[in-house]
Length: 154
Image: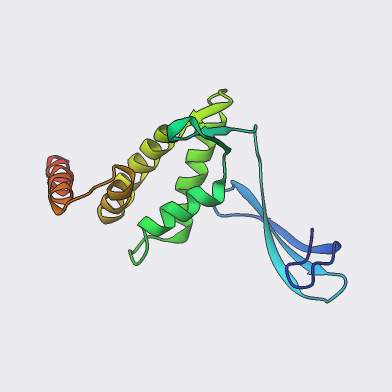
């Protein structure tokens, strides 16, 4: 593993343990050149998945992009990072276990919306505003009212 501080190619694993959700392994490493310590995470990747975006563009699935968009929706909300990690891991697992080599970005968006709806209504609305491309305040009002109606029914 390359050291993020000095870019040396060799590091030693000092400690390994599973993460809270048992979806990855957390490893503490030490660079054999500069002595700096850093943490890496190892996750199982079942298969390479290509995301089909609008306009038929294709790109490899990137967990970090998914994690970043969910984190942005949850920013300044009382949502624990481990809850975000669980959601992202669950979505990644669903995508990789479909058996399909390609997944539409709209399918991922729907999975994120379903997950955020259960975690935090504000994060859900934030994500929806970007995903569904709200252009006016009225769009927010209409969507928020449907969220509120659904919450009162449950």
